[in-house]
Amino acid sequence: MATNPAEVLGLPKPAWAADEVGMLYDMATRFMAEEIAPRYDEFEKNEMFDRESWLKAGAAGLLCASMPEKYGGSGGTFAHESAIIEAIGHVGVDGFGIGLHNSIVAPYILHYGSEEQKEKWLPKLATGELIGAIAMTEPGAGSDLQGVKTRAEKDGNHYKISGSKTFITNGQLANLIIVVTKTDPDKGAKGTSLMVVETDEVEGFERGRNLDKIGLKSNDTSELFFNDVRVPTSNLLGHEEGKGFVQLMQQLPQERLQIGTGAIAMIERALALTIDYVKERKAFGKAVIDFQNTQFKLAELKTEATIGRVFYNDCVARHIDGGLDPVTASMAKYWLSDLQGKVVDECLQLHGGYGYMNEYPIARMYRDARVQRIYGGTNEIMKLLIGRSL
Ligand SMILES: Cc1cc2nc3c(=O)[nH]c(=O)nc-3n(C[C@H](O)[C@H](O)[C@H](O)COP(=O)(O)OP(=O)(O)OC[C@H]3O[C@@H](n4cnc5c(N)ncnc54)[C@H](O)[C@@H]3O)c2cc1C
Image (cartoon, rainbow, N blue to C red; front, side, top):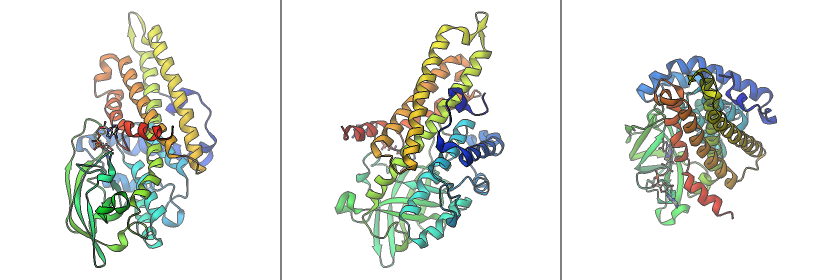
């Protein structure tokens, strides 16, 4: 396989991926290949990573790459986060939940936290001492987040949080969790507030099952229970109650774009692996690549992957300039994750029976790809949002 699977498309690098972003990509790729890939089967079997890997990633400068240096980050932009997520996808260690930690959890604290909150939490997120998660989804509220029932009730200089969450990425390991709560249930979206729960510091917090998924086995995805968990009022994110829904809406474009990052990286890896495979595999006395069907299929996939990569690169350029609107971010999430599903499926087909065997990476990619159309807002919800712009 090409050293960088993106090379199968033969596209020039966008301006945002030059210089130190390119160097970060190379470094992250080496880290994932040398430190994570050799232990990946063990993480899949345990259905979670270990803390040591997070601390190593922190020491290597791969956590909080886009956070300011004064809070322990590397002072980069989303381009740097993209380089790291692409490295994860290209090496094939997709369950490492760094993308969520870096591009979702840390930015909430940077954008809405007080100076004191930033100084307290960001440096520890950058070292890996704190592992981040965001808990929006509940058993009764997924797509419709206005239906969240978890309650945060003021009690002197504390909030008392009660409720349960499910499907939470990094849920077994996370020790800093941003929890979507209702501070005023009568006000609907305007009664929503984000609370930071440092799980090591509270009582009444319980982790439920590490959920048994069909893919992304190495990532812990969990139920979480809050039984009158008391946090200081200073753990409210932002300066006043009731801003949670607006904060979520403002941050979702980056969350959606980074799902697109994983998608395009996996698309490129699937193509690179499959091109190698069909050149090696023989049937009817010739290489599988010599059948016209194989060439036509791969020609179609390469064309669509190229369209996807050009669109993705444009979204990143716009996002870095502050101009990526929520509708385009929804297009990127839905279209790239749909394309990922299609490309990985077709690539598996070109592997024949070997594609169905877990020892071949395309099999794992097939299982891992499916959820991309579901989390971060389902692709149906993305179309709903795009539809509203018509
Ligand atoms: C592996 C994994 C990791 C996750 N990580 C996290 C996490 O870290 N944090 C977190 O908070 N959540 C997380 N989630 C939850 C995820 O975001 C939700 O599963 C998703 O938003 C869908 O919600 P739901 O499962 O309740 O489905 P539902 O909302 O019940 O949807 C069921 C179906 O109805 C469709 N639907 C719903 N409303 C409409 C509508 N208005 N129009 C048309 N169709 C509609 C949906 O598209 C879907 O097909 C994760 C989920 C998974 C599987």
